[in-house]
Amino acid sequence: MPDALGLGVEATARALASGQLTAVEAVSAALQRAAAVEPAVGAFLRLTPESALERAAAIDARRARGESVGALAGVPVGLKDNLAVAGEPLTCGSRILAGYRSPFSATAVERLLAAGAVSIGKTNLDEFAMGSSCENSSLATTRNPWDRGRVPGGSSGGSAAAVASGSVPLALGSDTGGSIRQPAALCGVVGLKPTYGRVSRWGLVAFASSLDQVGPITRSVRDAALALGVLAGSDERDATSATAAVPDYLEGIEDGAAGLRIGVLREIDLAGLETGVQSNWTAALERLAGLGAEIVPVSVPDVRFAIETYYVIANCEASANLARFDGVRYGRRAEGARELAELYLASRSEGFGAEVKRRIMLGTFALSSGYYEAYYARARAVMEELRKQLGAALERIDAIATPTTPTAAFRLGEKLEDPLAMYLSDVFTTPANLAGLPAVAIPSGVDALGLPLSLQLIGRPFEEGRILRIARAFERDLDWRAAPELRGAAPAA
Image 1 (cartoon, one colour):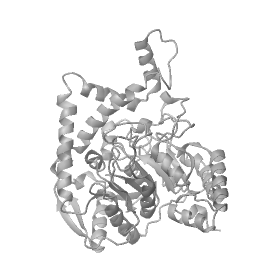
Image 2: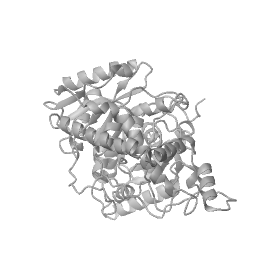
Image 3: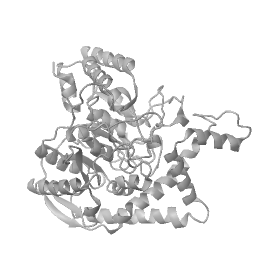
Image 4: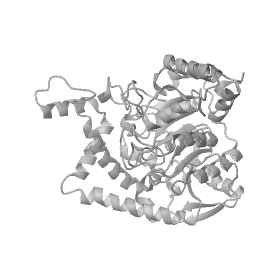
């Protein structure tokens, strides 16, 4: 029997299909690994061993009867806890949803389950996906498996840490301004943000509706491509869902990068990168050139304003979306309130954490009378101009390359008191969200401390296959080993 813990999504699915491994064995191995490392890592808010093993046994029984079981039948997965799963708690990492259970499942979850995947639990996140370190969760602390004194990134920090620590080969995250790619980068795994509309958002608790996107976090590029093929496709329940046909993302993925044109932004400020990131970025470009790609300087002037534009738009949309959490219909309801306004104030004050309150206040201010045109409308105009500039640049090239993050994983607590420094963690990831473009983060080596670093590739709309092809060539040449060694199950000191 193969070692289930050493297998990725594709290899696990192949071993299951060939009978070398049963679903129960694969899921049991994942649960055992999670039990061993969770005291140290804290990737999961909840593990669900009983339901996972029950589902795995049912898959084995169906396979034994010769029934169709799906491309991912028996593959263990983790789900970010802002994705609804019918009958299960849905917390978004917040106290305000204490006790709430979802009556339905998100489309992305439904598609994974229809393909036979087995969820072993819900992963931790920054509250309502608002954060870049996973420290804003009101429910748990997640640590980076490479160094448990450092953050795993955010907001999908739990999902990235679950994959990096070897508990699951696949986890779902959501990406509003980099929340799949940034934690994938800091945890040394692959994170894919699809084109806006490529994967249904139905059942994803909204943060910023014009920016949010669901995507996979895996240990390899091929696994990300396989997962996207399961997740992608139109959904009549999501009005923003694209109707474009879904290709086979594995087709042509091994064709290499030779002859492809990769753009490098003239606006990248190397002085803003950590020393280790600077040298790694230079080495990454040399590696791409060595693979036969043509490196082309390109200019996207308004990319300099992406981070400011993002935080205006995202906060405004968050203010509107989070208005529904008011203590009336579901979630936390403050006791002792004598009138409606008092109920709203008390419930939201008790239920929301500091970062969520900050963003609601900023968004509400920007949307208020007298400020709407100066902030939100202006930010939308810059967003549209950035979209045009990126589109024009991508007409001449096959992808744009950037570092994924300006730093490696930083220490727990290091940036909590400096929100602006925290926000700048997303400086390279926000442009793809603002323009609705697909982007993938792939490991590109380590710094002097042995912490993982990452390369980001941004592509044309609905051309995920192109950036995955380049990413696969880079990954194959680098010969990356994704999982750090976690010794024992003792918590970090």
